[in-house]
Length: 235
Image (cartoon, rainbow, N blue to C red; front, side):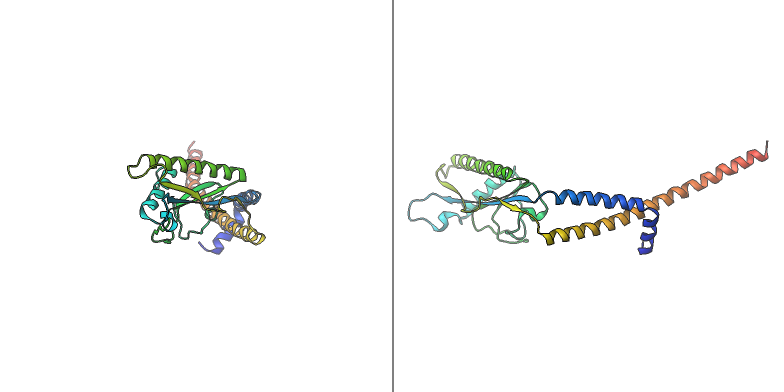
């Protein structure tokens, strides 16, 4: 398949290309009218309640407390291991998510290895409204407090007052994220290019299918004509 084949197919099956481009246009308009999204990244620290003198970070960097925080994160994920990205600063909406919740342990190891240095759970929430994000945030915090209490109470080595849960300051705010004019222009250009490519491929596929159907009908038509001529010559 070359450019000449594609142009020939688009010229003969222009309506297929038009339908594909129209579908892409509707999708693009729908996405642009969303008005952005709302996002929050809340950091929840786990530490040990200890009498003075306190340890650095109150034990938040000890393996036992980090493992405890990992167990809480896994429970919030309904038994699944917390997801992680190659960069700890990567926002959840950067993955194309417009509504969802991501629970993960603070990981500074990068893409190829996990390295947990602090007992910190990051709650990333993306939603269509500030109220929805706040509601999810409050619900997750309540589940964390309940899970910590139950796990601490059921442990032989800890009491409900052993583990302390604290939200990092200034991380409970909800941000309104909206693409800039340049980003919108780039998105429109990329979507337009994708529409042209998809429309061209769809036209080629439709043209090839039409040729195959025509090729199958020709032997049947020839056979019917031969039968008709035979019946006419032998009354």
